[in-house]
Figure 1 (cartoon, rainbow, N blue to C red):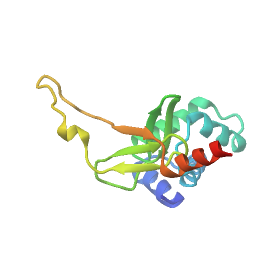
Figure 2: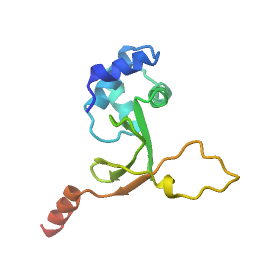
Figure 3: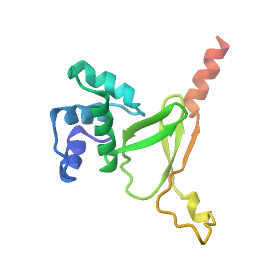
Length: 145
């Protein structure tokens, strides 16, 4: 888990002006183990910063993603963000749809994919969605009751 200081330091080292709002965002993501939607972030930030627009929140999320502070994953209900992984090497994820826990996939499926000669890959993402062992057990217990 990243600390608030590490997140703020990364933003600062990437040339991003560190405002109180961005420090609050850093604190929110440092304390949130799973993924947050822009709406979740907006509602949280609105409690502290009255008059804050959704556009400002979303713009900050996008800037933090571009700088490598946050990762974005597109779920069926829309985009969500979480802190960028500590792992520096290229990897992908398995994500629990219930609790949001994320497991790294340590190999890249693109390495075994035949790319047509007339296509140049510049970026790719690969996520697998399912349910972790704990959420499956919790569901089974809830159904038995």
